[in-house]
Length: 214
Image: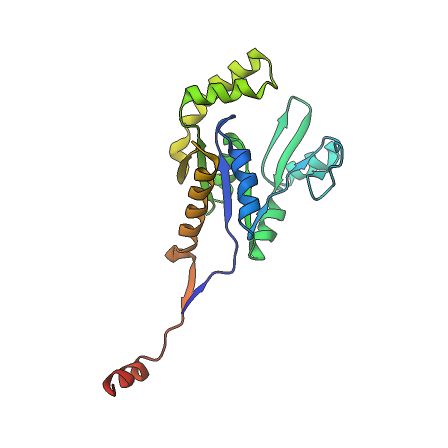
């Protein structure tokens, strides 16, 4: 019998804005019971019904900057020149050590920072079916100015050049197809030889005796 390692697996979903990584991540969490979402830490205030420890870990700017000095983040960034967002290293490591599979949905710069610290993770690049489709998705959002859309579109071309630093690429042509591909990747990774701790084999002489007495 195969005995697998008890540690969980870190799955990192990344890709350009508009590729659909957030949608895929949400569907995976609905469909795969063993997956847990990595909760980010932020210095911004809670919005609406957001709860500390569920949606984000809400901390002060001073607390966050102290954690930066101590090297307590897998990655972090200052967004819009005001609030910090980051992935707490200790929380992820504790979850993995307890056997939980953790999924992290993050931008490309952050994903590559995580890879420097946790190379054993599964890094999956979510791609749109075409750049024209990406443009259409950004426009259909209808949540940003034309200048912001153009900026995101230009960034997408640069970000796609980073795809060779990932383990897998998944084309998000249709959400469920993409989700199924990511689920297949996770399953395949679980079967890798280096994720097996030990083999428990039956006694060879006993089995040979059974064969000889047939």
